[in-house]
Picture 1 (cartoon, helix red, strand yellow):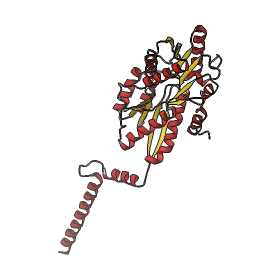
Picture 2 (cartoon, rainbow, N blue to C red; picture 1 turned 180 degrees about the vertical axis):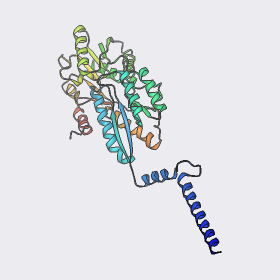
Picture 3 (tube, one colour; picture 1 turned 90 degrees about the vertical axis):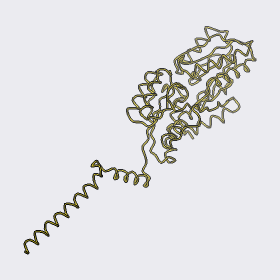
Picture 4 (tube, rainbow, N blue to C red; picture 1 turned 90 degrees about the horizontal axis):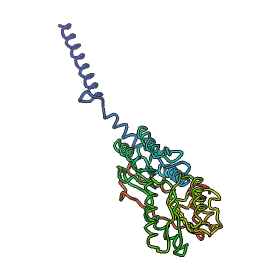
Length: 349
């Protein structure tokens, strides 16, 4: 009888042990038999509560590394990554994938490479919209937030555009040039890359405004590779071949990024230019240039990163799909004061 009771008790203990093991196994695998999701959720919640930073990588694809306006944009993007990291509690990195020289196909390849690398956002200034648009759309389809700055791809799936109203920009250039020339004379337009949509619109703005000045006419629009040296060469060759040119509308400030680009005496030929980077200000102060119309080159990088982070982190869209920053008029009188902003932006103080 004692043996029977002992056997029964042993069987009961074994049964209870097996039931306990089964419950433990069920708890670790979940009721469906798959891996437990509650552990990952708990870890995620613990990470959030402990303030763990998310790593966010933003790709920056400008037109060319040699162009000073895009060097300024790069500086702005890096500053935004550093300054806004604490605001969003994230570790933000800028991945600079700009071609050495302007090339829309290389921009497209850079966007594809950034998408494969798993970046969360991309900001791009399009050298040629049709070439870059398919890469933008593929990136968006993979969940990457894309915006355009400076030069748009309006038919793409990009979230928004940040920069200048280019037709208004061309209009302002021509208005200032007409005033400097006494509303008469022959002008030429310096226009950079003929395929760039932003520059096409600026030229349109110049021409539309020029049509309102019956005593003025355009001799020709000159296109060129967007480097300081090639731009200066284009101006010098055009002026030597066409001494009737009395004024220049620079829809980009490319030649003014190098020394001795304008070979005539100060003020003999009137010049109004877009952009007002530090290298351009001496031309203004010395009288070679009448007016500089400053774009937010630094902000192209800074504001682009800010807009992307608002979408990536807070799921917040911009108020409109075209975020326009107004031009700043820079003359000899306010050149020094304006230049101090660059000292701050580029950390030269």
